[in-house]
Amino acid sequence: MPLNIHTQTIDTGIGDWIFTEAQPALDLADSVASLWEGYGDLPPFTEKILPRTTVELMFNLGNPHKVLAVDGKACDKPYECGWLSGMQQRFLTVHTPNGSHLISVSLKPLGAWRLLRLPLTDVTGRVPLISSIWGQQIDSLSDQLLSIQTAAQRFTVLENWLRQELDMASSTPAWLMHATQQLENSRGQIGIQQLSRKLGISRSLLHRDFREHIGLAPKSYARLCRFDFLLKQPAKNYNAWLDTAEQLGYYDDSHLYRDFRAITGTTPREYWRLRTPDGSAMYI
Image (cartoon, rainbow, N blue to C red; front, side, top):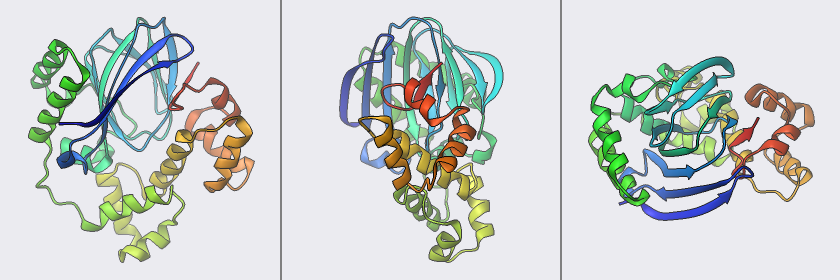
């Protein structure tokens, strides 16, 4: 069963969002970061979803959504049933026309590799429909999720499905887990050359296996670890948040602005003004 299930009602500024989150059962903890469900009877809105260090396996239990930009590039694609958001280096723009009810598995990159059984570069910077990955067999899972009354029960169904689908027998380099943990624990501030020396492997091998199993080059993943951690930090005001950025190795304003412009398409101050309550997105 999922652990530590917690539900809260969040005032988003455009309406209430009921958010339920759970930690995965212990046998899934190496592959799954969390499970979450969000529901809101909200007016139409558009937001930029900002990159994180997880791959999101999303099931849509409500009305269709529309993706207007992927990897910062314009598109116009409706999503009715569900989708998988691979590792992103730039923002997604999503329009929600008529309320939202989503349930998601936030997969650690190695967990996504075990689930998809393909190089994660195949889905990096992409948002494929789940039907394009699993075919019609995924429809029965979606129908089952729709028929269940509570988030906790839906989480249990998803965990049981993951136990069937995750290829836990597939071997990954033993050092790869340590490498991702060190980048995450250092908040992306450990140098790649230093990391390769600590692990006793070449930079070329580090780069090759990171792209295969994580979906990004090590330096890109380190950059994302720092950015992700910064978005999660609470701060009373913009200046206090800038102080946190400096502590994370954004050594001057131009460094922070350059990263923010590349990842979000906007400035840190504009992000601060338009961010959602959890900091993971911006209203536009």
